[in-house]
Length: 220
Image (tube, rainbow, N blue to C red; front, side, top):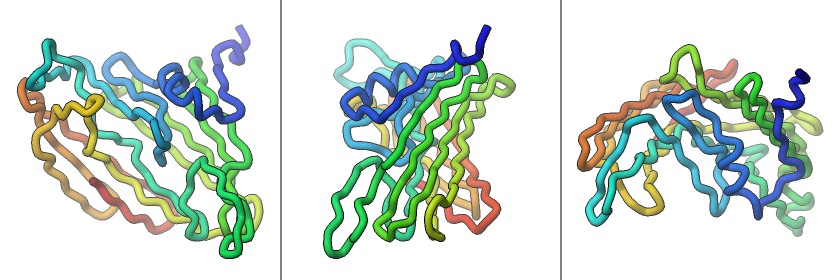
């Protein structure tokens, strides 16, 4: 069977169907699953990672629910000082070039269990960069999820800065299930641990940013 039959593709970007594609492009391994929200965020998105068996019964709820775990995808990218996003900003006197997305394609390869997004982005400086985002949930170790971001300079010699971490400021549609977060950072690694408020489940997460150049990490 052709591997193309195992692939679903979004082209071009359709912001009005953002939540739909977040759902059908989700990745998982049977133990945990992550919605296909963008690493850099987008207005109206709904990032979520759900872990098997981690339920909590919040005050005022009739039944317990699967708890939204801290967001391990969180990252912020700038290209020549321009924050990367899928918005397109019209040029003005201070920014002679329109900034934002000038090319986009996202594909879920169900044969290999890989979600891939390619974005052609133009910064205010005029530099154009191709960003390639990939992520998967490991079947070899069910506790491991990974992402890779590649940068290809298409036009210009841009300076690219990336900050990555774990976003612990998450809820279930406004319902808070986690108690106080415990965080730590050590060079290129950050970690976070927290406990559900009623059921007492403890979740710990750690992430490491690996790059051939110098890196800075943060967590929230």
